[in-house]
Length: 271
Length: 358
Image 1 (cartoon, each protein chain N blue to C red):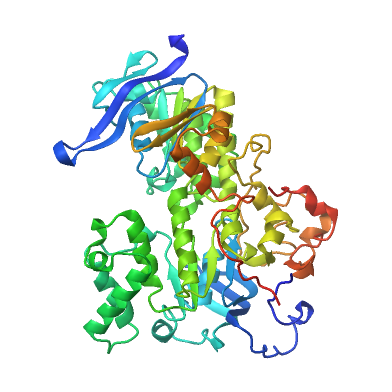
Image 2 (tube, rainbow over the protein chains, first blue to last red):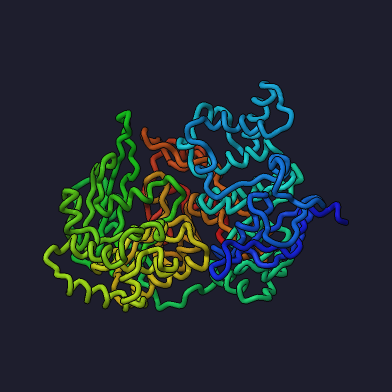
């Protein structure tokens, strides 16, 4: 069944620095990511989830262990674009991902440079239009617009439009919803599900909000201080958390039905 | 339970002289505040359009709404921070019974900001100057309001306050921001903001960039400060309704510069009577076993541009249950089921088709 595995990590670690001052960001982690699966990496800030995501993107190399993509090891040498054709990413801050001196449309068009064979100009225009429509943006709306003229939610959808153009096998979504407001968040999640359904993409969703992860993913990985402390199907992890970290994460979510912080009676705006 | 503000009956709001409000324990009173921006092309954008509320001693009012609906502008208006291109159109803001809208910016900085109303910045971790020690930054806060304060009294005051908020005062005050862990820095920022015991603290999305555990720690600290009576009341601005459920005692939902629903937390969260606040609640997610079947629904589109007056209901364009006459008739705030609502159909079954609270 190795052909159904997208990524395979065997005891990978990433250590920054040397000697006494070294920091182990990812500590001896083993996992597998199956084809057409949404997995979530959940943890607090600084738990190493982003470093792990960067290793999958070939932006970091593991200091020890073996990381396989489609059965072949990811090497630090050679043209990285071969890897990036198959593995793409969406980041937290869409404004820092686009160059503010060029129009959005021209930047979406420039993403075709990643392909080995570039389509004809007419086809490029058509495919950009299709990608924009796929994320519910009328191409007219953003014609000639620069990144700063759009809202955060719209820009995040532009990043997703890029993914609809590139159609990679794997998408790494690194906290794509933490900069957008609550109601755009629901739509971003819908697009991720759409990518999985329509383009049969494998998605690695990195987040600190276990609620989002629970909603979207097929399996959950909880990280703490570089280690995987809990993993499994979302329902199992939520209902029967095995580690204290998971319990803490679940407890820290403000939920409307549960006492969150014990407190005396608050003052109401009563007459 | 009923909502207090505004003091006068709503039907009379448009006409007649404003009666002087009776002496109450309201610390912040905002009356029909209208605030506008002027763009570089000279267009006037009415970002806050007729907002009234009053904040009582010990109350936490949550202001909810998506990006671009005027939450932060309302706060700038309440603090008297009229820095161009932001201008005051009409209405009044009173802190402790004293109006602050006519003040110059210098006067405001000297007498109001920090002392009567203070703000906790959004990126609390990035708002400290990395080249200065914590004690120097904190001393600035005191010196800007009391130039005659001497070094020793400042030091004593800082040490007393920092110990009270649970920090190792000697170590923290003599450190640079980089030497401190994130949680401590957060405490320092909040400690400095509330150094002069402001009547009202404005928290403008204090937790939006934090992970859930740090977020909880910040809220806990704010509650601690309230229990110790360092802070008396708070305006809490966020787009996360589940968070407001735990933080605030009343919630005002804002859309396109207006309050669309204003009531107690339970009223707004569990039995909202306005399509927008219901839709906002419907777009929330939670880690509960039933969540996967209850799909979150996003509100399509974006808030309207406010450079031209909008006829009829401002939410009608995006409202899933908009009726034909919504686009033509002006909506007014009226009292339905004990809270203020701006929707013609608030008391009918039409609104119940939207969202469906958690």
